[in-house]
Image (spheres, one colour):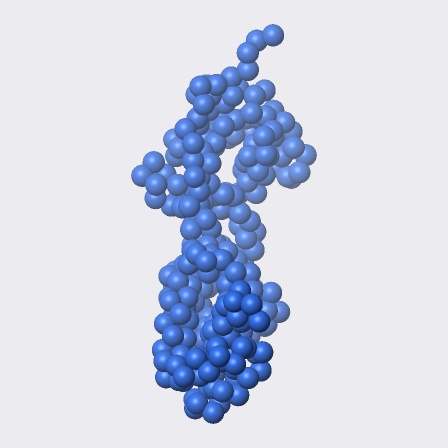
Length: 268
C-alpha cells in the first residue's frame, strides 16, 4: 500500500472512531474494530497501541467541539429539542463528519441533515426547521461581505431604474413567527416574512414584513424596477399597497441602511 493510501486509511479509521455509536472499551474490541477497515498492519498496530482511553479522549474532544458549535449557532432550536438533542447529534455524527473544515458550517450541516426527519416526526414541534433556519440566517448575514456603492448610485429614487441595496441582507419566508419566539415559547403559526439585515453598527436586525411588502422587496432584490415590482406585486396580492405606503416602506428601508439608492441612468 502506498504512503498516500496508508494515510487515507488512518484518517478514515480515526473518522470512524468519531462516528461510531460507541467506542470499543477494550484493546481486543479495538483490534476487532480496526480489523474491519482494511488498514496496513503497521498502522492498525499503531492505532490499537493508543488504546481505548486515548482514542475516547480524542473522540470526546472532537465531538464536544462540534456539539458546542451547534449549540451556539442554534440555541433556541437546541432548547426546543430538549433531551432529544443528544440523540439527534448521535444520528448526525453517524452519517459522517461534516465535509467542511470550518466550525461555522457545522450548524448548517446539522440542520441540512436532520430537518427532513424533524418534518416527518409528529412528536417534534412543527416549527423546528423554520426556527433552525431562522437562527442560522443570522450567521449567514453576519458573514456576508459588502462593497460600498459605486459612483453610479444616487440617493434619489426613481420608478424606472433598479434600486441598489446593501448586500448584507436576506429575505426569508417561514410558516411560523419564529422571529418573535423566546426560549420555552411556541411561535404563532401563519405565513411570516422576515428581512434579516446588518445595521450601521453591523448588528443583526430582523424586520417582519407583510406579504405585499415582501413580494415587492423580493422583486426589487431580483433587479426589477420600482414600476415593474409594483406591477408584479399588484397582480399577485388581493389588496395592492398604495403608492404612499410603498414610498413610506422604501423610506424606512433607506433609514435602516438597507436601501442605498438607485442606479443612475444616463439620458439618451
